Image 1 (cartoon, rainbow, N blue to C red):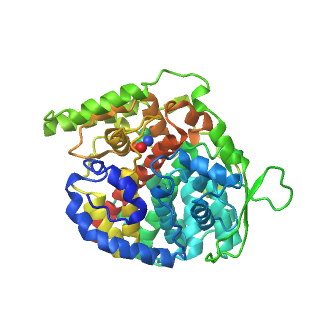
Image 2: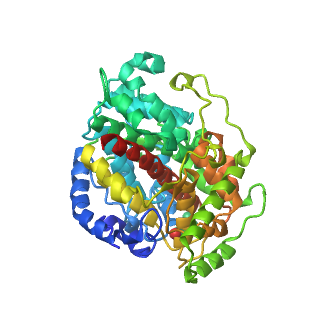
Image 3: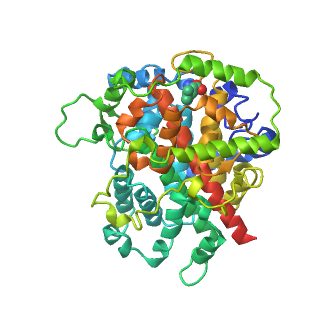
Length: 521
Ligand SMILES: CC(C)C[C@H](N)C(=O)O
């Protein structure tokens, strides 16, 4: 399969030439891929320029195939060993600096996967700071509204800063009752998209685009992309244990510095004329803490068993009828409903300092079993990102379709052929099961996929983690991160969290764009 993403992702994609079939990426999309490839490359260059980014030159090649070397390299950098690739990593971090001049914890963790971080960063910069129909203050406020649905104070605080840096009206930060009606009109869609995207229909789009002070279609698409991005990013933030661990909120020191610090000086070609000071202990602390040794919970299927199952599944040639495929999907879907209070936790009360950004806080995810018969399964063969979503976004908000497409593909195909320290493992079936399970939670079915594989490869504790991260991320704590996937390396747990982010984002966008398309035709 041609992914056409240039040298930075060649390693990862080459290693997973087969990973695209039947997952987010369907087997028959090679042609479409080739057609897109050229425009994607061109657009990527344009997007980088528009977003004011330098090419950090970071890719899988920077750390080879082994992501566990990533933190080692970073740790080396922390302690002054810039090594041969130090400069690449430096550039990456400098490009990811917050306006407040620090490297954020999200970037810090995503750096386990530089190939991914590269496209993530380009996309986020573009939708927040690049060419686009929405004014900059709106963009950051929409991000706040989105993060508010999951009470993600980490993201809310970060976006509040950016909002003010863009000259945003301070009054708006007093809460939703202080924002212009036009912006407030988006809240209903924000709410539905975050928790029950299957309820979005053309009337929601119509309401926004009709009447006084209405939204243009391009503005709606821009807003939808921002909403989906920040809802899903909240899943990553909670799923990776960032939100409730203040020590992972990398902070910038302006005065007293007790810990050893790394001073990142901008490379000569950088347009940033500042110096970034990052506290060093956080990432080291993250790495040093050994989750495997932490408190025991229910036994997990070990990596060796998982590897055997993956092997058996990839070798088998069982013919499964369409009817059986459907039944297996429905079985996984209804089983997921039984995990209804995952990890036995409840949503915590909203903190007073963010409650003014949240309306109708009780509006939440509803399990398949309680959705009512009138909600049909979303079949990817009828409406897919590849065939429909991608081109609709590109038409109304040019460049972004390409960036999202590349981000989805990079994530779906990301592999190092490793698992829990074992080498040369084909992890395709596991990764595909995780991706498709995430979308199954949203009622999305990939017709050619055998959901029986999900039950063989994604055990209950991981399902519960995934479901909580997608639907109730605010319930997750660092402890949940520690207790799940205990044989996986940190980089692999973050890898799974990236899949949660992207598969959820794609699911939201598929529903949102289908509603747009129905409105437009
Ligand atoms: C999520 C992980 C198990 C992924 C695996 N390390 C791979 O390289 O494909």
